[in-house]
Length: 254
Image (cartoon, rainbow, N blue to C red; front, side):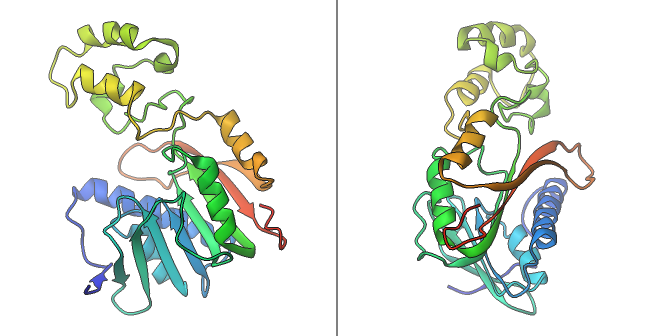
């Protein structure tokens, strides 16, 4: 397969593409501030299939970048315009096809609220990190946040749902709430909204307590939880939680 330049433009809505690219670049920069990436091997779990994190990682001089996602083009080698290359792989993060102690650094951006088996993903991340390696994990809105339904990207729909209402109301009650409100033209039908909130496999409905227990259950010791503000973009941005983990010993305790 011919290599595809990561520096070429993507066929996406310009404003959305720019926002996604800026976020990916910011998170790679954040990882670089925590642990310099130059000369390191980097694994990105839940990677952008458009190569946005990849292009920034190459600019910062990684020795190798591997992005894993079920949305990625199958085994696509990517290069920047002037330097080293990386890979985007279509791969299940719960079954990584890499040997133990393979990567210096790992990154996961706003993906753990979507992984259906986060514990297994963490175990795999832990397995493929070298002793002394580090991982940076960030979360977008988790299930128990005010808009954990993840419809905030579709603002006309999100505005119809009161904060935390989906945690308090049954599907039938939510239908009764949305039907009169959603009588105008919306990008989603009420049935589609209800399916997304209560049945979609795109969100895992895991709360913050379970996430903390998830890390603790594998004897992973986070360096710290903190609040991370995205860089100012043209569109509204939101708070995230960030967890930085460092493998300090041969036992790879995070």
